[in-house]
Length: 399
Image (cartoon, rainbow, N blue to C red):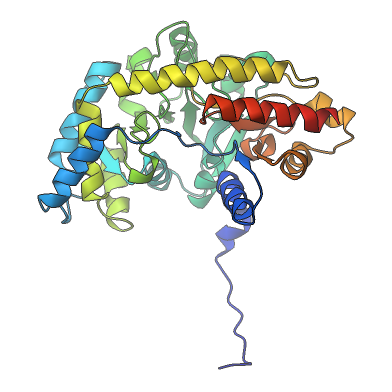
């Protein structure tokens, strides 16, 4: 009744969970644009390209053909066969259909895995800088994230010694993201193998290899999947990927995972009680993406690399910015501690606020990725937009 306000409480687990920082930046940028501000958003982890036409055509045909019903919870047989072929073609990994699941985005695969594997008393090792959702997914599963820090001096990669020191009797999971959001860092085959040697001594640890940016990469050595680099750990590695980034299909929400049958089965059970199957139309579009002409991926990746080369060099020309060249993704992650000192700012969050206020530039503070003193820019936008963004950033921090 009006006037009798009811006080509702949420679960205790929510005390440690925060909304996605990147989602908050996107929402704020949209709000400011709607208010008339000329905002350049460099915060989105989203390709600026349209989904390739042959993929859209496959979805249109699916709609017209009536493919609008429930599918198997873990994905259609046709999509799972396409995922099988992708793993074999690109990663030299052989999976049975029972070892594959398709979900509503790679994010759901990761979330399902955490719920399937982790519980109270367990620990998950997460190297920094990390994708913003990893620690909270672990916490929602009742486990504790164990953060292993790396900096620009270490190329944002953890060493075998760091990994060994972080492992305890409670460790159940290691998360490796390569190429990495937010840094663009990619582990080489030999670096993955060195980590694998440590993990061989700990048979209870599962490795999740988040390889969503696999095809948006340009490392000096060819990209290597963790399970391919460390075949002796294949039986306890879950490889996660999707179509969102490489095929400009973020809104279609299709991710997939290959891994041990018992874990994949548990993830399927969790999915059956949450979302059920991923969108039937999106599954057919994803099948077309994985099995069709891959020239679209090469074209978009070439554009990302050109933007990377320009943007990283331009950031390094701004006094106080120190930016490492990446091997992939569409992010730049400069260290900005000198700018903070010169501008008398307390944190990277303050610099993000200053750029939004004085330069109409939206970006994400490094604190959100477990790396205070850095900020993340997305260069998934046209070159002329990046050039204007650099002009504004330089003016704002030099003022």
